[in-house]
Amino acid sequence: MESYNSFHVAQKQVLEAAKLLHLDNATIELLSWPQREFKFTLPVRMDNGTVKVFHAYRIQYNYARGPAKGGIRFHPDETVDTIRALASWMTWKTAVVDLPLGGGKGGVVCDPKTMSQRELENLSRAYIRAVAEYIGIDKDVPAPDVYTNPQTMAWMMDEYETITHRHQPGVLTDKPMQVGGTRGRRDATARGGVITVREACKILHVDPSGCYAIQGFGNAGQRAALLHQELLGGGRLVAVSDSRGAIFNPHGFNPKELVTHKLTTGSVLGFPTASVISHESLLELEVEILYPAALENAISEINAEKIKAKIVCELANGPTTPEADLILYKKGIHVIPDILASAGGVTVSYFEMVQDSYSFFWDEDLVHQRLDQKLMKAYHSVREAIKEKNVHPRLAAMVVGVARIAEACKLRGWV
Image 1 (cartoon, helix red, strand yellow):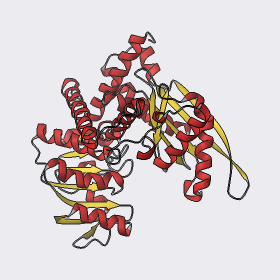
Image 2 (cartoon, helix red, strand yellow):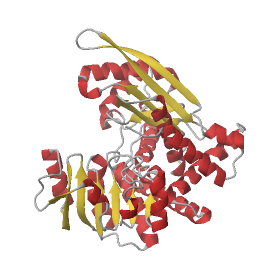
Image 3 (cartoon, one colour):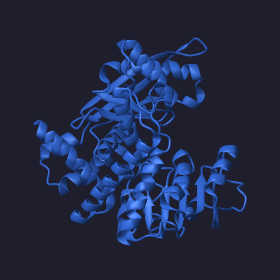
Image 4 (cartoon, helix red, strand yellow):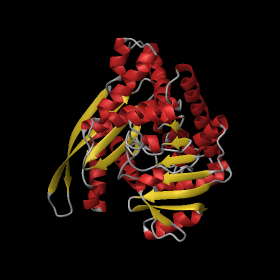
């Protein structure tokens, strides 16, 4: 359980960036709170004939630069403050990548692991019936998040179109290809992260074909393992971990074979030529690049001094604590913060909105090319802020995002 309130952390990050930008008090107050919050109670008929009432939220944090954008998660531990924090981070993420979008987030308090497909569909449709008035391609565009997926989005899109009597596939993103999804979405988060690593290696003169390790071997971790080789021209994957354990081989693993093993067996454990190591020691290996792609707070003040990677690329949300940020910065370790490193997903979701709006879809090469341009430009914007403000990368990324949102708010005359 978290020992801190994630929304208070998010507000503190905004305040730090705002002070560096010398923003006035009214602008700071505006950017420290969501612009709109919705709370719903959803009655849903379950398979056994009973009706269960679920509590749900949608938070539109800021829409100065465009419609709110952010996922919907189904999770038993959701609270209004976790969703506020996630909506805040989505706002700065879309701004850092310079997308014409704001930030939002939604959630339903439920345990999807105990629910049937029919019950999940009923819940998905109930959520859209509650929120339909407040979302739309020009208002708020949701996407999947924890325990939701493209199928969830297809149900939700269908319910929205049933209510509005109009074909509007762009109202939700990360849909199946057959109903308005885009090519290039499945690996977008990892691809964006690897693109930023490529740029960091050029500037810091780090050899991208050296050793790398991945903590967390879910979708993002698996794709990062493959894309690191593809986009950086090689590299030796020496360690990976998942929830069941961590493995190591100083001579390196074959990423394709390791992904196949994980998908076949459900774990990285048992892979030939691998020795088992602890989760903690994986993070402390002497590698060029470390990808934390699993849990929050993996790197904290407890282990930050022991981190030896030259570049840390955060594919997970919040894997480094604020205290660890300062320690890594003083050690000269370059952290690519999550609001930049994992922004490839929302960038390609934006591309999906664009394609849906005029019913013409790009081939995968064009999606990759445009993603590369966006993430490369965003990385160098943050790099400039690091040098100009002389701050650690996470604060620099916040400075870039907060400055762009603040400017839009001022131009509109809100503050």
